[in-house]
Every structure is written in C-alpha cells, then in structure tokens.
Amino acid sequence: MKAKVLAKELLSPRLYRFDVEAPRIAKKTQPGQFIILRVNEEGERIPLTVADFDRDKGIITLIFQEVGASTELLAKLEPGEEILDFVGPLGQKSEIEPGIGTVVCIGGGVGIAPVYPIARGMKEAGNKVISILGARSKDILIMEDEMRAISEEIFITTDDGSYGVKGFVTTALQQIVDRGEKIDRIYAIGPVVMMKSVVEATRPLGIKTIVSLNPVMVDGTGMCGCCRVEVGGETKFACVDGPEFDGHQVDFDGLRARQAMYREMEAREKDHVCRIGLGRDE
Ligand code: NAD
Ligand code: FES
Image 1 (cartoon, rainbow, N blue to C red):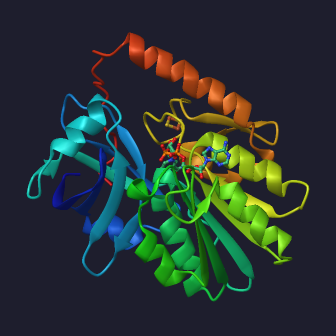
Image 2 (cartoon, rainbow, N blue to C red):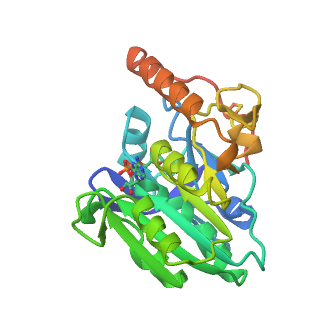
C-alpha cells in the first residue's frame, strides 16, 4: 500500500527521521517489528525496523542512514510525497512482559532507533530500564532525550570521548556489571560487531541477551531465503522467525560472512533494478 511522508528531519549527516502516514500498520505494530518499503518502481526493497509508532495518529516513524542508491532515493522524498509500497508490520514482536526485572537496553549508532520502542515497552510493563547509548561521537548520537525519558538510568558512550564515557557500549555495560547490578535481560541492537561483543561479554555471566538482526532481505515472507541466519545450529529466517534472536545462539561469524558477500555483489551489480513487486498490500 502507498504511504505519505508527513515529516522529515535530518538528524545528522546522511541520517534521517521520517514520520509516515500508515494508520493500518501503526494500529498493529509492536516493538521489535519492521516494515519493508519500496520508494518507486525502480527502487529496491528496504527493510527498516520501526523506530516509533503512534496508533492514535496513525504514524510510523523510521530512522535510516543514506547508504546506497535505494536509501538515497528515500532520502530525496519530501513531506507530502508518497512511498509506493509500504508493507508491515513484519517479523515477530519483542517478548515484553511484566516482572522481567532489570532490563539493560543497548543501542549502538543507528541501532538506538529500534531499541527505543522496546525500552519504552519494557518500562510500560513495569520493568526497570537501564539504557546504554553508543555513538562514534557526540554529533551523531540520536534519540538521547527520548531514551532518557523512559530510562531509570542512562549511560552514554562515545568512541572518541566527545560525550559521556569514552569507549564502546561494552565499556558502560562492564561498569554496570562491576557495581554488582543484577541484570535480568539485555537487548542489544547495533552493528554486528557490537552485538557480538555484547554477547561475548554476557555469555559467561549467563544473562539472557536478545539481539535484533538485519541481514539482507528481499520478500520479507520467508520464501526467498535471503535473510537466513544460523541460530542454535538451525537455519532461521530473520524476516519471519526474527528479527530478534537469543544472541548466545547466533552464528555472528556466518552472518558477517554473508553480509560481506552481499556487499561485494552490490558493488558488482550497482545498476541492478529490483523488479519483484511487493506481494502484500499490508
Ligand atoms: P557504529 O559503527 O557507529 O557503531 C555504533 C556503536 O556500536 C559504537 O559507538 C560502539 O559503542 C558500538 N560498537 C562498535 N564496534 C564495537 C565493538 N567492536 N565492540 C563493542 N561495541 C562496539 O554504528 P552505525 O554506523 O550507526 O551502524 C549501525 C549498525 O546497526 C548498522 O550496521 C546497521 O546495520 C545496524 N542496525 C541494525 C538494526 C536492527 O534492527 N538490527 C537496525 C538499525 C541498524
Ligand atoms: Fe526472504 Fe526473509 S527476506 S526469506
């Protein structure tokens, strides 16, 4: 189905926030889920985890980085213009329930955006939310105010030390562990290398750690096999079985190898135009 861009904001160079009018999708979306969009007939399908949703206003908020031809096309849209195909909500929702206890929500870079609705949901369910936001530098840190508003405690890290603690998100996680905080669950979303580091840090501590994977996706319905990942020795499809998985079971090295393979293919086939239409209108 078509969806109109209602608002557009440049958060930092090449990083955009779009509010999109999609009332039927907003009504059903749960934290952790994603949409797939196609800007126009020439555009590739772009899967984006939902950064926020407003059921009353019928708005889906997306935060995305301009990284290639398709996201450049998306970034060119102005308020009032329409996205040709907007499909969702897709994937499994986050397991949010009361009584989990202390939940540490970790977002790295653009990964802060999809962590926000999970953290908010955890707080609304009555859990204690401690957030860790990591960015390369202060000027590209996003959603600090939103995350601060729903977190009991927040840690900011920057790789260059321009704001908060100097280091990675794992530096702040270590501080929380070292002070003896009892952590019941961790959500970590960001670059694969970050999620892998978080998982390696929590494995010996036995803390359940959920990661959200965003491998290359095409149909988003479990048919094409593009988004397959190895989890606990089994093949799973991120689009229908995920995107969230138990991080301790994920084969991150396999995931990185597949990402690298697709990057090479993209570089070779820069002029490829995806002609597969989206099969569902919602
Ligand atoms: P980035 O490279 O700027 O890194 C962000 C933060 O991650 C860093 O500031 C640091 O705190 C942490 N980090 C990086 N390397 C680390 C390491 N080796 N150990 C521990 N922590 C480390 O991130 P970016 O350029 O904003 O990229 C964001 C990534 O998130 C993209 O790769 C994108 O694919 C991914 N992402 C995933 C989802 C999802 O739903 N799974 C959604 C959006 C973005
Ligand atoms: Fe095709 Fe997941 S995107 S199987």
